[in-house]
Image (tube, rainbow, N blue to C red; front, side, top):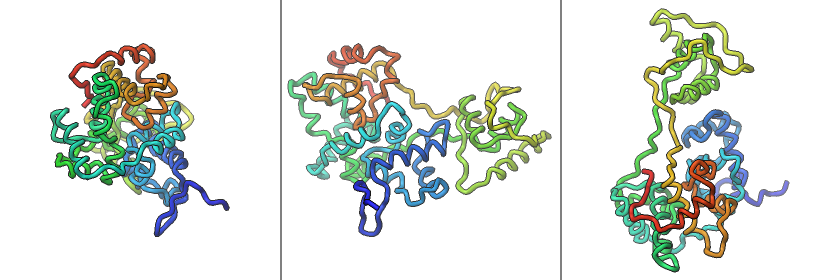
Length: 347
């Protein structure tokens, strides 16, 4: 058998997954774990599910991100977007210059400069990249050849690769650790099953329950590792018995779309699902200024070029998110105007 040219050889083992194949592996895994919202699968959830998904020898989520030079949220956004090409993303990531020139003092300077610009004592990688792009954009309008920001502020991926992780970079810079992503705590499964029964009169599978949660916009707790669905149903039965309600004996047919005979006006104790759509027109224009600053002056701005460069800047909005504010070239024309001194940062 021919050896995979993308396979990575280590001193103690060889992984059979090439870099390009990892995109397909992650896409398939997250879609199986959360069919309705695959982009919300966590690294811990992915790592724990590898044996049950038939990929026990797959690298961990952290190892995958290191090899592909990206973050986990950006990777999920890429593989879950049918309009984007993972192959182009990998090629773009490989084109980025390695950070051989970096040292500890440089990292300390870059992170603290961006933190001061934001007026904060803590900095996430997304916050850093946003502010870096906006500083580069501002320099591009002040100086003919782009100013110093693009030369003195390395990209977040270069920093993460040099330091090993973004948390270590913040520690090196003397900044407070970045806060964990504010994911919503999901409604416990027994309570959610109880609400499903009240709405439909039937039992459900986990996927049907997840569809129900999406329909009524509430966050759902994850299944426990190695847990049985019958255990969750038994807990729901106990919950209903405490208030004198019985459990149905039949499941909702898998082949039929869900219908609700008693749709809930609200779900007690439930929180809204996690949102990613925070885009406003000022933020879109700020991202487009970053695009104009990142591309060479001789390259004509096109949607194809934007999509290709977005692989290295996953915090830029997908074009499907910008259409509500105008056509691509109209927005670029507005973005070409000198920005204000106030940075429109979405955090």
